[in-house]
Image (cartoon, rainbow, N blue to C red; front, side):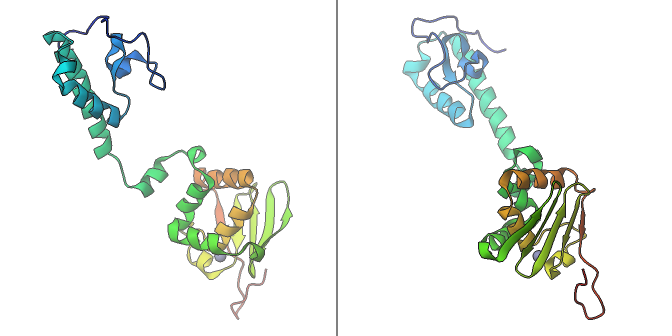
Length: 215
Ligand SMILES: [Zn+2]
């Protein structure tokens, strides 16, 4: 600790200002609920205000040293965490599956460009034909989609899907199909696919010699 923590002052607040943290340790002058430091913006604002002599002069030299030290600590802490911030894509991947929205989950599997194309497929081109307890079966354009949540298996038959079976990337048809499903079911499904990616199998029907799907 640097300097001396200020005691209660006549100009101090009785408690946290409205909408501000109720935790005293988040203020540079905790006893007086002054100079909140809970966000990078507030820490910088605290620095600005406390640089002004009319504000500084309300405290003794030791107390000023303490408040300066607290503010600087907060600013440093936020600077470290910002420099460590990763690009948005990988930040998404760092989140827990249950913290992600359906669109974010889909973006992880489709990428932003495919997700946009998925969204552009007309609703009338999608039909969900059968919904069982664990199985959902339907069509997107002329393609088949069969999701078996119990056995963690997705069957689909477009070329893009076939090309990306190994990397478990999803195609725009699957994206659209999942966007058409009940949102809660879809989000739970996608979170499970993300959480248990290794157990999920992405499959395509066998093709016969003419290249046409037989199942
Ligand atoms: Zn497809």
